[in-house]
Length: 152
Image (cartoon, rainbow, N blue to C red; front, side, top):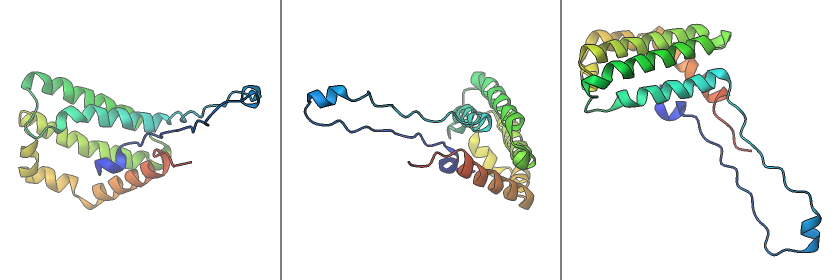
């Protein structure tokens, strides 16, 4: 999935302050500040999943002593993603997470070398299979429609 499409946008709420002050200003009720809506469990799990994969995306690799822990954290976050997936995209999320698991397996097998993933033809074939790509696109569309806040 395109990382930029999956990263959840933070909604920036700005209030404009008026210039000057008067007695009338003091009589007005205090303004109610808008708060960002709490993300759905799935959208929250997606944030966790993305955060868990960040240490694994370093092109120069990850130190061996940290690799196993980082992969375990990513797998836990991905399991939560499946657990919280809405029924209408659950099968697609499961397929997407299975492709991620293949990549995590390859990272472990190659000592965290992310460039080795590009050279692994079997991995490339598995993650670019039409059904995997279609599932990834449907998950991406769901995330864009559901998890990305819209401007007010």
